[in-house]
Length: 430
Figure 1 (cartoon, rainbow, N blue to C red):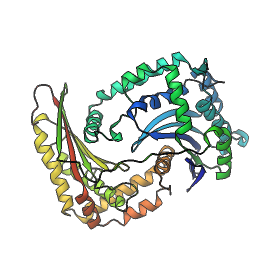
Figure 2: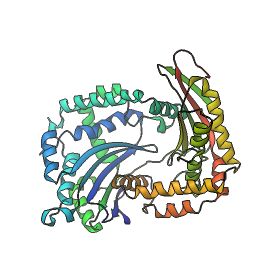
Figure 3: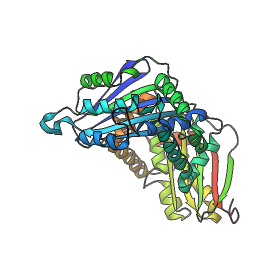
Figure 4: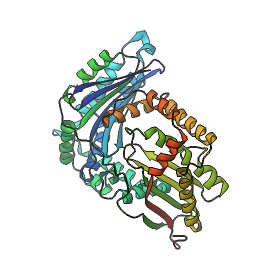
């Protein structure tokens, strides 16, 4: 696989993963703006309203017919958070040209359809259709409110809100439910125009087409977007907690407690020299099936129903997520922290290190076998000012990580905030 990138204008970039290994090509366009509370709901709502119809395909039925005509292409919106940026995207997966009848070109008409959906929406009186805004606003509000139904995800969500209070990272990428419901066609149209004018733009293509062909197609189908723009998508990274460790306890009608613990990684992010060691350390700690949290805290000590750790590579955070009995909050917390202390002291075997390295390398290589993951990795790097390389350089760096480097990465990690979700019958262990 060959990965390339090209700047089409100031603040506008094109990334390409050129490969023949897939039967489909993937084209995406991503508009990136700083994540702010006052604009988050509009940013999340705009792509869903756009997807309701374009000028020539003004409803979902005709839009579906247009994608069916492109050998069953899959076109859809996405809203992603990358660090402290909100990314509004459209992605289109379409059969690669070599598999089309008579070798007909599919990339160009697919790009043209995507460009029309994004830039020439169905309107009423020169603005978004009121019924589309109202319907999608209600759908978005339901989606926001449904977060609480996934208690594991909710505990992480609340931990991040508390831990990063006052930082843009704590803003929900979907915004607030009441703001989604209150959105008007006039207001949303104004937000849409601002998005098109001021957002950073990242195009991506994965497939067999040459760079020159992709660039020419993108320039033709998305011409209004390819103009110089000033983009500020910086992410605030705190190397250490602001103060003493905070514990937040909330109660709900739940039968299993949720313990989420947030750590600062000492400022280590994806672009840092220590990032490969942090990846290995995370796999040793709780990011793999052979990790200390899984084998010791969950299996050996039986203190958690589940326990794992995950990284935000852009914000410099590590989050431990676990499910516990109410009476085991304190013991589970102590055991989770004790395993991190063990790793800080270098008390792990070469076999554990090798297994962690293999786990990370396998995960990184696996991402290269997925069109959607390739797209996500390339777009994320470009959005954050990093250069995509297909992951090969990172894999080689991970394979060189030593036990000492993994232990040093562990020493930089500091506990910031603890979140406990307990039952309503009393805060057992809390």
